[in-house]
Image 1 (cartoon, rainbow, N blue to C red):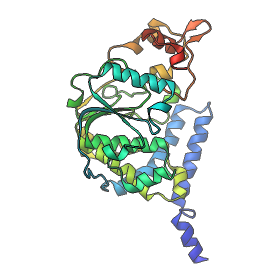
Image 2 (cartoon, one colour):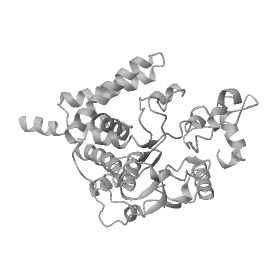
Image 3 (cartoon, rainbow, N blue to C red):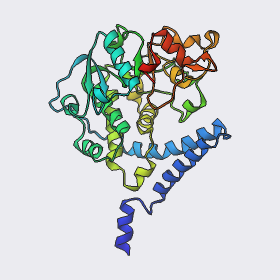
Image 4 (cartoon, rainbow, N blue to C red):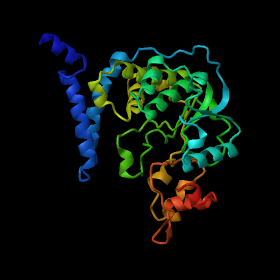
Length: 332
């Protein structure tokens, strides 16, 4: 019986600390599903959940897994990842990729499952976990981008990011760039309630660049440390936003990491408005700010339904299509 208990303990089945994380995840999910719950209560539930991971991160903050191996660093490139390649891209992703090719001065490299190891040095165990289906495509994509940015002088954008115009001329001169508002403001100010879960105020990662490699190598190291250490049971508690939790933790707890973020470019604070306000009836006095010059890219999605016309009126998404002379058939 004792041996059986020890075996179960390896998987966290009898560990209160693991129970608390799983239960807090369930509590957070239920809180989010109950529309009547206040944002204050939702934030408290989220903080409780995050705290469980912070305890792990504190123990592993100095773990090191990043290695450059024999990968040759590249300069002035944009990386886009699509595991199955160009041919299977959804319409919106294909639109974004063609737009990128049309407007940027940078070399574009499309990463897929056939060339991952040519440009990155992902930990072999993580690669194996991904190929065996133990980590999701989304999670692997997060790890891949931090690894690439720690090696190359490059830009990362998700395949569903629409580039309005070419990147700023000084984009690679900053230590770190991501969709980010000015200091003291949240990226999620004036956004729908959906985007306030969880409360991720420091950064988003669908667009990243920066010359401070330590930012990305630390982000990579701590994410990998968690994935390599989690038990079978703890996978149930793994957050979809794990890599964001890592970033928020490093910003809170690592003085050098936070210092490296000081020289960052506030950018693209309206990047999520097309997606977030997609079906709202377009009113220039209300939504004209979305198309301001401060935002040079928009985050879109192929997982959401978009309507160009609603009640015989142009929607925010419809205004986007009209502005860039895009046919509905090209995206829907």
